Length: 397
Image 1 (cartoon, rainbow, N blue to C red):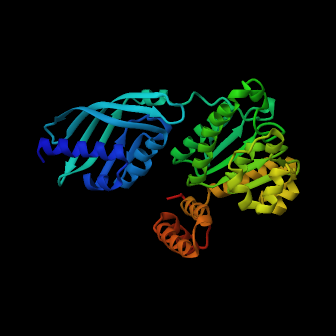
Image 2: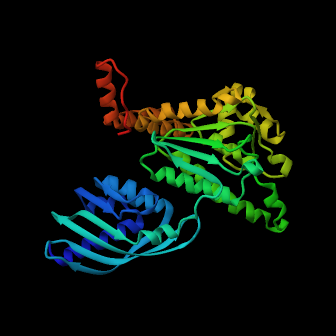
């Protein structure tokens, strides 16, 4: 493959990435394509990628979820070993903060049969990391050895009230979970005796009344984007609540697949008392969980829902004594983390899509997802374990 053809293939690669054009990428990438990204690239995206689909889904599209950026090549040079070296700059911005990105890159492209068979991506990872929000200030976050991502709302001095920082941290954590392949389950809790009292009223009191609408928009934009991402991550989510769970903070319960409440928990939307229409995804999730009539009464009349009633109407899945909540929730998260997470991801997707689909749509989707999960290592392990009369050791692959 001569140098002009190599340069043309590289230009087509960058143009396809800028457009998010999967079909164009299929044309320019060899079926045996592999990729490598700079070690230390933020959000855990550095490392090796084993196929065109892996590079697209796990690296390029993952970048696109966090940054609006494109590669601008400046120089291309052929090497004696047949590779092409491309020098240039990534330019764009971080989607949540708007922070500008300018990061130099060096790409080494290898070719086979007229197509790109490997990309080795070297870039200034520090420049990318510098665009991300600062260290978390309102959420304690860690991933333990079992693959459980622990998300703890951490403003106990104000009963975990939601301000702009907590809203932004929710998005940051959601992105970390989405980008971290080691995460196998998520556990959301609150520090102190209350899960969250909802919006931080002190923030509203300190604001110009004429600017309150703009403040609320600036808070809910990252807050809601965080919930959108959590709805689409490929791992199950457990939420454990106690004490007050109010306002948009109920959104953390809506985000969960399984929600456990202590006997002290009391849910209240609180929106109508503040003259607000509400946030946190209530208008989508609450009618689907408890029915339209109950959702209307709970929100318009601002009716509190104690834990036992929340269980009866389907807002939560279990209620336990307060002193048992933490251990019960952790054990549930551990059980899910040990499970077939690839299958869980497909179940979550099927359940999420069911509300807008016909029976025919869902039957077709079930077949598609069953076919996909049938190709995983987990099902092979489950069948082997069944024959050997032991519990399967699922790896999420």
